[in-house]
Length: 402
Image (cartoon, rainbow, N blue to C red; front, side, top):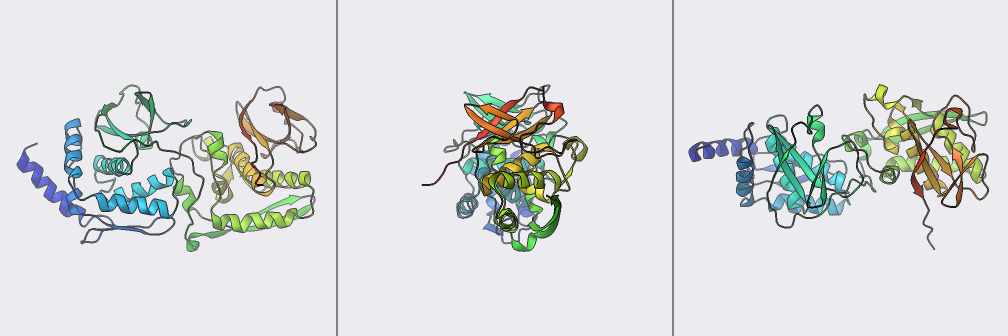
């Protein structure tokens, strides 16, 4: 590309940058994020040019150009927002994605949009990498957790997970393996975590009422809870994390406040085992069942809050919700038992009930949170699983405060 053409394109990009998306002509970026609006003034000097036929040389040139630009106000504002609202890495990345969309819309220039995401992450301190695979720009980040469903590559003993694989869902990266583009960014060394341990405080006006009902001990129970479908957007393209991370995704404050106190009220006066039985049957019968292939066309684990607002859910989703409810209300030791096509739970009581599982010297009673052909009680196993091997994929041990 000639220098004259390059500077001509830069001038066009800079003009488009000042008027694209939700920006005003003074360079203000406004993002309607889950917790609170994010705003920052972006200097036109951060505009870069990337062609559709993207090359390693173009990426290097774009990085050299933006490195001398006035980008720091954006990074400082992003990190200040992350700290103020205690965003986990995954939710911080959702904010980065939205800011990149405002700077360079994905549907107009995917390569430039991805470049901005990468640049904001590395300047936020994360060890993120770019790679090219036959005109595809692939975006990776260093992660040392057990993540499934998405490609990764190893560099110097570090595992890098692909953050934008969903945009190339039909691509076979084994046939056309991405070639890393080596760009050294000082300070970009931190790992990225997919753990979500705190949900945003979503805006109250974005919640809606949902009615749930089920029968327990010949009595009809009705629940009116507050749910927020923005949770679904927050977990869009969320990968298959390990079961400890998955089971410990919390509810948002508003949903928690509409459900947990009501459950505690209904459980008042019940014994611990009776209360767990109530929660088991609530999780089993208050929601319609459908497997993920029929519901989504692929395997997809729902967080507890997603299960609450979704019309359908399967065994993974109910196991996670049951775990969360028992943990929050009774805080009992539990294990998750994974079969080839099913997952179920077992709870440790002071005295075991019915059939039980011995794991690491401790005794757990089966608690099936998914509807089966039989009306299973605590301590009863579905007939179809009786001779089926399983593995323990998560053991929860409460930490009691003194």
